[in-house]
Length: 390
Image 1 (cartoon, rainbow, N blue to C red):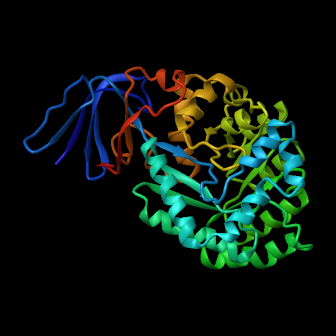
Image 2: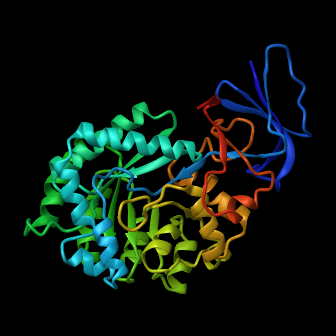
Image 3: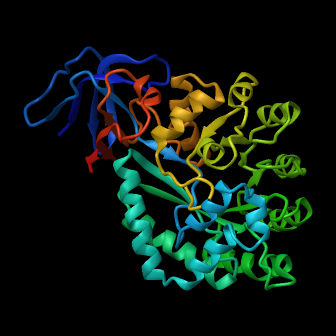
């Protein structure tokens, strides 16, 4: 049996601008993409009349910290009083306050919270999502987080891609913390999660470039792909390190120089920009327009976390990408579907083309520009994962 979604505004075909057409889905994959509102339907096939609304690939959110406990509302009040993100972190708040909450939570409590967030993300059209550890810091609690993410991946109708964020913050109670992470936590993660991407946060008050080098070089020796948070507030050399080591992505880039952006664009590394973080934290945004014009592989992601980016909404990411990063609507849509799918190694999705996995969303809008123009609310009406409506 084939599912036919007819009379849709199709967005995400790799070689065409949005057009009026229809999509066939069989055995979990797109079987055909055609012009015109109607398809030739056989007896027993299912039909969905899109009534001219936007049909596009499901969102792929390639950078999140969606597994956490507690909240950071008190710190938000401090921020509104003028305290900076780094000042709050230096005083034991920020990431460290979430670390305390995650350590105190049981695995079952974390699983329940993550399942609820993933269900909301799916309703918002996110069918594939990366989730990082990093709020455990200790070997025991990092493994606890990664096991919870793995459990969520088994239960989530879409796709969850885990990342071991082992270099997130420095534990002030552990004087030789970096060495312990490299010599104890990393081997434990490698034993239980071989091949998982390893990430770090290179920033003042977090991991220094030299400490990131020690962690990432050892992770690379063990066969792990590398990612790096870098240049959020300061350009400390993390970008150059990531490129030297062949990192899959560099994420944030608000403080990256034009020369740094050009270096990333000339490499195989993806540039991941997180505009909700800039909106919520300090009104600083990465130079998305310049990066694309240089030929860079641009990904937009939510950075969903309780402190610097308290939103899982990819439509909001798109709206900010257009307003603050200077992207066109179609560029922002590409940066939240096809390109992040490639970053995460999910080359079978993120586009409307025969053979692609049928992770799809149907919007309430008939013009794709409304996905960026409208602020607030959820424009996603229907979601399919591997051809099954959720």
